[in-house]
Image (tube, rainbow, N blue to C red; front, side, top):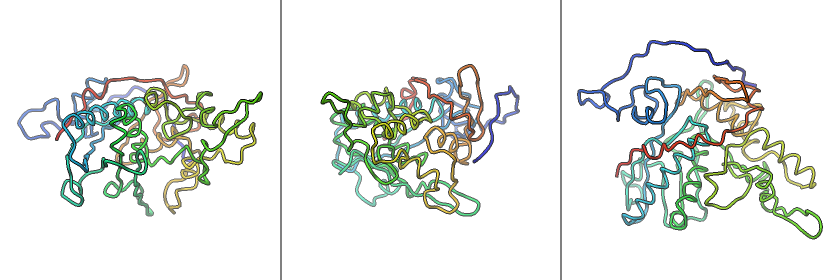
Length: 340
């Protein structure tokens, strides 16, 4: 197990701001003084400190639309990514969001725009969305290869519902940013929704629906619900979610495993010799590991455990007690920078 957990202590540091990063002679709101990917004005508006590089991380995404989209469709894309940014900020309890997006329309394969993009929107795909994740590891370094990691989205979903599209973005972002695995399948690839369970008196229910009714609704796919409610109800998986999953599998004598693709992957190392192997595989545990250990992020989350406030600088067994917050429900999408 990877150790390390510190309780919050007030400290004071001398911080040298990187001012005037755009070279216009003044330090302004749309600069990133602490280099955490979030613009100063965004941090101020959401209650973060633009001089503290460890309190939040903002992501920049370059989006290629692989067909000629109308101006209305592009506006729907902007709105959906703003919703997705709020969803991500919510499910990470206020530590990650999409700070800015660049949109290219009617992009041709292998063009300059195509080659620099990390999100692609097709007119049609065989899935609502998927992510190709490139990982690297050696004796001293590990991480996500940004040049070979891409999100692919089915453009038809946006036409049906902007909230559903935002939910798909949020799920795929979990793969893209944190190397989360899937939670709608077990380690052997068995889909939880393929099981019908009997409730007696001739009544039966889909197992994934039953998980949702029992309060298990995870970003990476445990529990099933209406698409328009996903960004309001789904949270990253906790230890308690896996306890419920395991108990119900035993109770109904199902032949699937409680070890999801996500849990199994992170506790066995994704097959890479030097990829960190964790003691637990629920998403909140992995998120804290990635935030505190991945050099690109170095975010130290302060989490509330009933009456205790804990600042985590690594993963710790206290995370077994953590229940994700509902919220923070902050309108970070209103401050997302959009270029096209």
